[in-house]
Length: 435
Image (cartoon, rainbow, N blue to C red; front, side, top):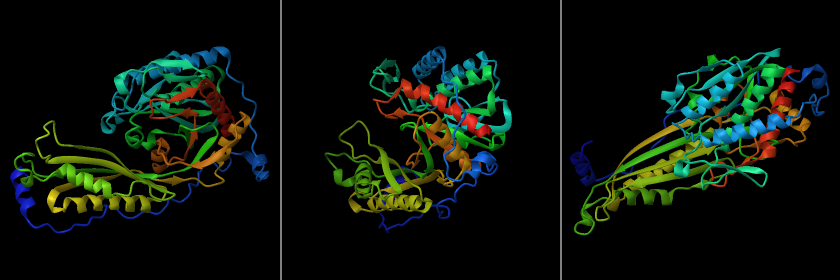
C-alpha cells in the first residue's frame, strides 16, 4: 500500500475487525513414549519398581582436568558470540576437537537460522551399542558493550564488565568438550553424538533448521536450564511470536497535530489494554519492544512496531493468549484519534512437550544426579530450549539444569563447583545410559 493509499484508507469509515491465528488449535502434547529406551534401566533395576537407581562409581575430575575446564570456559566466554556471530566461537570448539583427534561435521543451517555458523556434530564410539545425544548451544544473547572479561571471584565466574557472561550456554559447551577429552583417552561407556547448535537464543532457529536424519541417537540430553543442578525439566511450553506494524499519518505536531494519526499512540493504547505477565498457572504473555517515530519531536509518528510473545504448556492457551494480543492491537488501530492500518505476523516458534513420569531417560538422569550427591527435582519450565525443537522433530530429549545463575542478566554467573560438577554428572549419566 502506498502512502497516498494509506492516507485515503484512514479517512474512510472503519469497521471493527477481529482476527484468529492461522492453524488448528492444539491440545497439550501426549507424554513422549521414549521409544527404544524400555531397557535403559536394565532388568534388575526394572524389577525393583520404585526403588531409586544407583550409578556405578565415576572418577572425579583430576586437578589438571578441572584447571583445563575452567580455562576453556573463560576462553569461550571471552569470545563474544551473540546469535549471528557464532563463527569465532565455533572455530574454537572445532580447534579443541581437532586437538583431541575427533572429526566433526557442520551442517548448512547457518543462513536459514540467521546464524554465523552451522550446527556442529561430533560422533564418538562407545563400548555399548546404544548412542546418546548431548547438546549445547554456542550463541548467547547480545552483550552490552560487546566485551566479556571473565573474572573469578567468590568461587564463581562472572563478567567484570556490566554485561552477560555467556555461561548460558558456554558452561555446557565447555563441559561437553571436557567430557570429549576424557572419553577420547578413557573411552565412553556408550556411543556419543555431541551437538553444538547455533541461533538458540532466537527461537531455537539452529536446532529447528537441523535435519533430523543427521542424528543417529535414540535419545538425548540438553544442558540448558539456569537453575541449580538437580532440576530435571519434564515439561516446557509452546511459544508464539508476534510482530505488528502500525501505519498512521505524519503531520506537524505543533501546527497540524489533528491531521496526524499517531502510530505510537495506537501502539501504546494496545499494549496498555493487553493482559501481560502471568496469565494463569501455565501461560505467560510479554511485549518485548515498541519502536516507532523518528528523531524529530515535531512530527506525529506515522509508523510503529510492536514485538511480543505468548507461552503456555497448553498450546490452545498460548494460541488464545496470542489472539487476545492481536485483538487489542486491532481495537486500538480502530480508535479514530489514532486510526492506523495494521499488519500482523504471528508465528509458532516451538511446540510444547511433556515427558512421561516413568520415562527411563528421566530415571537415568535422576540416578546420575543421586550418584553425584544431588537431589533430583522434576520441574515444568517456562523457558524453551533446543529440547523443544528436537522433541518436535521426533528425538526424545531431556533438559537438565546446569547450575548457572542469572541467565540473560548483567549479574550472570556460574560457580566453579557447578561447572566442574556437571562434568561428573554427565559421566555418571553415560554410565546409566549404557546399562
